[in-house]
Length: 420
Image 1 (cartoon, rainbow, N blue to C red):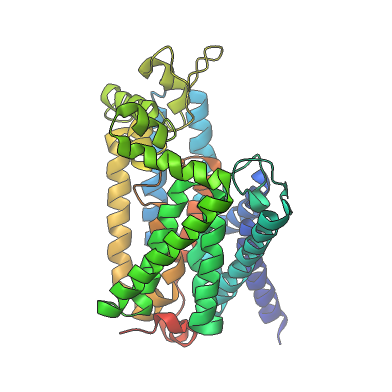
Image 2: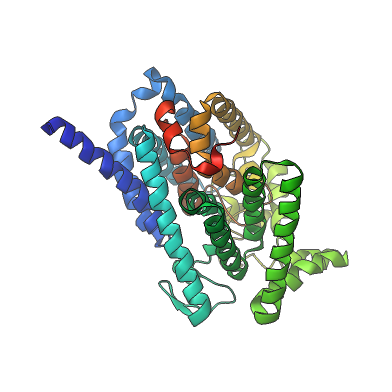
């Protein structure tokens, strides 16, 4: 082995490690920013590829579809310091995506990162099950009204993050152990996500299971029967949890309150989000072109809310942190221009993805499904311009924008994806 080849091999392994470390450190607050920043610094030398390499074009579409709305919204933002800080900080995502694309240019590197990510998620899952049974886990003691897992009681993101990333775990389980390991992993994930209490996560995970089951049974009558059986299993699991967990029962009863028909019951079922959504619509009406400025929702909230609003802090004059629905977030903070950028970026990326070789698309099913779930419009929890969920989105994009060589990728596609 030549010195040059050895150095290249070390760099490639280091790149894969950096990508995995972002996921490892994700539950630990800002710590995940360190491997991302190192990746971005290493990716700075890849910037010239934007102008000369066709493979880098989708990186540009993904980044500028997200970042341009921030930039335009900052010029007359309600909180200019906050907006310009976000604009500057999010520049790191461009070299990060370029670095990840170079790191994952072969199927071997991509599969290594996907397998390691599945191992990390397995650890989270087992830790959550331990916490559910003993009250203690890596994230500490569970003293809240829902399972917190490795994220801890002060950062209740377990359900949403596990539901989003579950395709990485489930597809790896299918590739390693066939359908039985897939079913076992799916059942354990279902139990943890239900106990984690985030109802948006329940819906997200249902979408994941529906898509994977449809593919597993290759559509048709068998798939419909399989979906019906899965729904029945989910109902039975929910019934068991309803009887054994007071916290889970409260979440179900809150959801059922929406059926009462009056606005107060609906607002209760939606965790009192109706005032937040009304405020978001008010901001859109007042700032239709470029919004109130990225991350300015809390500062514009007072002008669009009633004095007795439960989310309004009279001492600081700030309100809810974000719109709790990503389309409303984009429209209220970055306006119609922002939504146009998002739509154009997603259309361009989808058309590019459909033109990729079938082996590449199949090898990237897990991040494809995870991104689709994260951006599902009924997702009511997450702010995509926040540091946490912005990082999660771009980490998934880093995997999805990989360009493994098609002939090589075909050899490593999990059995689940080898369908006509």
